[in-house]
Length: 292
Length: 242
Image (tube, rainbow over all chains, first blue to last red; front, side):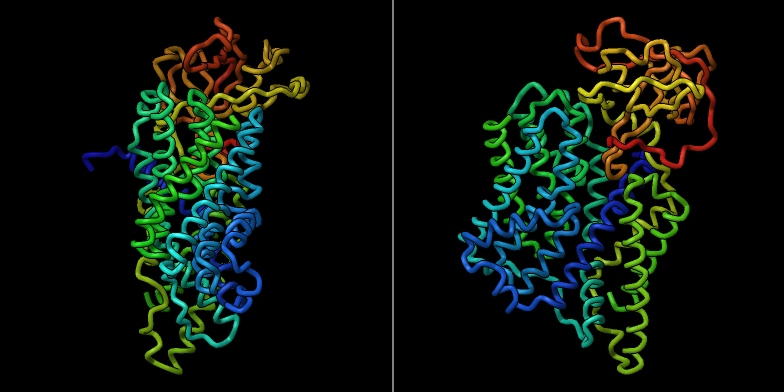
């Protein structure tokens, strides 16, 4: 190994295994819920529960994100099964984006990390919610909701309900889990090679720091429950640029891109990722200007 | 990936999680409060794995072709990579090498008054985080002339030629978000090897320039009364920001 020292290899292994171990419980919770959706939620039921018009369905789905405590890794298979069960794709996507960003656990950890900046918690909630609803609305209008197909297989051969549930949950687990591992490897590698000197070089310029934090959020792939502490540890940057970090990270990062590609397909990811990234940055900057 | 492969991957994952939980080794990768969620994950994975294997065998005896059917995409095989890395590289958590990658953390302002330090039962143990917080934000200067006990690992740095930076990582979820907490400890003792775990009884050294006037990296210093090398890291190697 000419390139890396033993210490660096060990550190890479630590980072890689930690991201996997941390994500696994949330992934398992996610596939248990996705298995339940596939087993018990029929398209008829979805038709009755979800509002017909996307003007109502999208914000409702965003608020539903409040109810799923956890990190982002669990919400991808759930959104996939919601689509398979007949949920309008725009609403499922809004849920996918909102759940990891605005749930109570994330907001509380943000408040703990920024004890004297209560407005930052509010700003995070608003900017993330607005970004999720904006992406959902955009999808409903531009795409008419037809292009999104879940690649999760529904061709289960099981007949009993319990067998069906375990089969679907296991399928989703190896599916989303495999892509999670790809993302975890990329995140561990980038954490190791992004030089810290980049941080100091751009702190002077607000535009550069906003762009840098958007990039860091994608590359570092830190859990939404933990990112506030990382942001709090970089006080030389403006609150707005750090808000960008908190709003972008839970919706787009390396492990999520890998999972989006795996669960919804490459064509979807190539449109969804840049649009969501742009909307999230704009939403964070605007809310930051108003509130912070 | 066929059914037997899928059952094997889930069983392996569940077993290795259970092993990490029993040995306490999970503490090197994630925060202690992840214990319950990890137990949940291990139990579900093992139940799913066993159920999947049993159903697979049953179906195969009824329909020999069923074992050929896809039970999930091939990418699922990647889930055994973390296990291979765990076994082959044996990662040991965040150490001295990780400390130089990220700027050390400075606790944010604490407005509640600090409790007095109780020294009646000998030298009190203190988290590195609390030490930094008291040093920087306590207007009553409760640390002044009090010996407290810190535990952390040695990071050698040219800024402390007569000692080391006692370092502990603050981890809120997993080791990937770890941020170092550091106290520069001055000592008369011999130089210590980088990465050694020590228990240090120290007295805070008030800063020459008030912390609030420092431009740039804020360094909290202390003088060692006694430094003891400990053979193993503590069971909970990381501090939590809560």
